[in-house]
Amino acid sequence: MINNLNFQSPELFASVVFTPEFNSFKTINPSQAWSLFFTGGREENKLDSKPQISLLFTMTVLAVVISGFVRTLIIQAFFPG
Picture 1 (cartoon, helix red, strand yellow):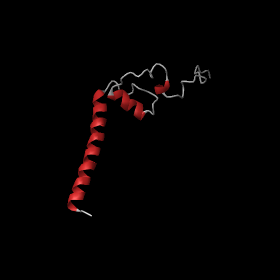
Picture 2 (cartoon, rainbow, N blue to C red):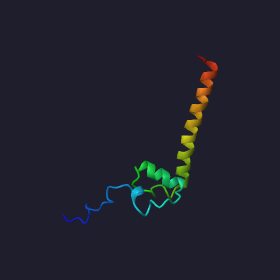
Picture 3 (tube, helix red, strand yellow):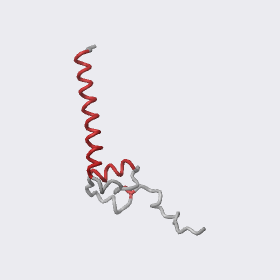
Picture 4 (cartoon, rainbow, N blue to C red):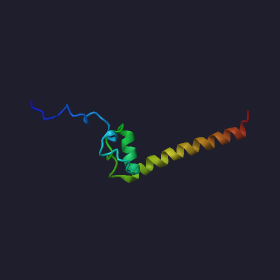
């Protein structure tokens, strides 16, 4: 069996965020940010074709944070001390 994989490449197991092409302080969109988060920094365009998915993830995180804050306020209001 012959394979043509180059396992000696330093970028093979490295994160994409540390490559010189990516790390030029350019602005990334939410799809790229969530792709980097879910792939552990290995791929930046995994969700790039579906911007609605990144909006869903962002709104879900925002809803969880707001509901936790509101829950704390309600518990403090009805059960002081």
